Amino acid sequence: MPAPGSLASYDTAGQVGNVLIDVTGAIYQRGPVLTDEGGKRDDFPGVALDAMWTSFITGLGTITVAGSIVSFNVSGLAAIGDRAFISRPIDYLPMIANMALAPVAARVAGYDFYWGFYNTLDPALATSFVEQRFLGSQLLTQAVMATQGAVGDADTTGNITVTTTAAGAGNCSWRTIALDGEAAIYRDANTATNALPTVTARLSLSRHLPGLYEPLFFAMGIRLSTPVAGPVVAANTYGVDTIFVKNVDRLVVNTAF
Image (cartoon, rainbow, N blue to C red; front, side, top):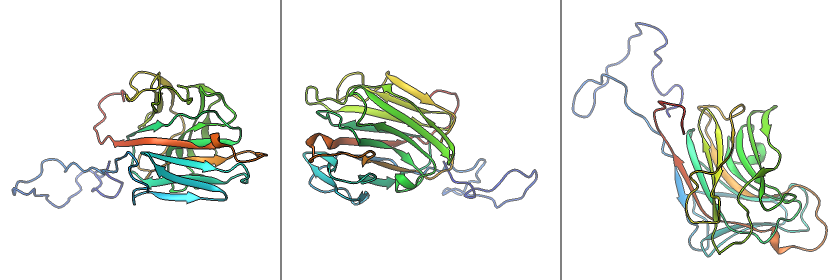
């Protein structure tokens, strides 16, 4: 989707512009098709993040890469607001983000995993976003969905039923956010599986979304939201096996996504 100002305006009838010629010398009868390719797939191989990622660590947070999984951890002695996350620029909507969340033994109160699209590199500073949250205070089969178009213009759900985050047969479970100008749709696979989710739509939010030409960033990580007493707990680590963000770049001809 080209950004405003990158093409001539046709709001004024009879406006004269320069003739456009293609590589063969033919005059364009219609404007060129422009795309912004910001898609990304990462299986997190090796022992370090791809250079395209920016990582943020505050307090006692850590980020590690091993065994094709990137892991996020905040220690049990950390302060509220401490976090460990990675982020990178993506593109304008419409886009689909798929994330294979590694199984966790348990949720730990205070430790919240989050992922989604944001209008800044740092989700904490974002004024517009689409986000899924796995709160430490929730059951293994619950999550929160949140969207915001601007400060004071937000939707945040209560406990939504999702595929369990518990360890299964050693498989990661795919989660999906599909975002266009009409809605943010949240899906997941109905079992722990290697297949991308196709049919299990958990929720669709349409009122408060990022703007059509809002440059977006993809981010994911862990943050400490409430006080946690006691020693470090191993279960406060969340891992991601694979992410796949697909820039759709399509002409909208109906209301399906």
